[in-house]
Length: 237
Ligand SMILES: Cc1cc2nc3c(=O)[nH]c(=O)nc-3n(C[C@H](O)[C@H](O)[C@H](O)COP(=O)(O)O)c2cc1C
Image (cartoon, rainbow, N blue to C red):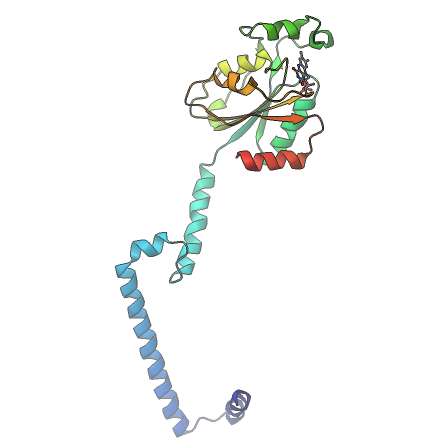
């Protein structure tokens, strides 16, 4: 039937008087119905304007919800947190992870470079060399060459360091005491042969003001894949 009617309409082509009356009647009914719906819709808006605008799931104004949400997201992006990846690395393990993080986030990166670079002999542990001695004294603050001039621009610092005798190298303490991180978030990570992050991160936390938000520290082994780092970032941010 539906197919036949359709064909008939198309074949006819000419609109006779009877058909005209039908069409006028049909148009009037359509106009009244549309008008009625419009008034009803206006009434609903008058009664529930706030609910409709704030309800993203609203079926009565889906377009409104869709357009408002991206605007909010854009605003959030405008004031979105800026991340700086800071790392110290003597043999490249921590550096590689820091570079992965930087690439994944599109963040800025800063390497903590000692004013007096560590030689191989300095790093030979259990020899009572320079690194061993520094780690034995919690008050040592090896000097850093250069500084981050625009630290205020960053809301989140992802801080990477190697584990030296269960702790962060003392130069990380130098870094943390060189700036005011109030209100910022610091996300620490470390690399090591086998030790976990242990108390290294919480000891660093104690050097900062209370308003600094610290995330749990995470330890990565040499050769950790970029995918694993991406997973960690997704969990942490
Ligand atoms: C002085 C010193 C002490 C270290 N102490 C530890 C330790 O306590 N536990 C551990 O698993 N690895 C220890 N390591 C190994 C480093 O944590 C590991 O090689 C780290 O990934 C090196 O990072 P980097 O290549 O970024 O410098 C130590 C290395 C040095 C130089």
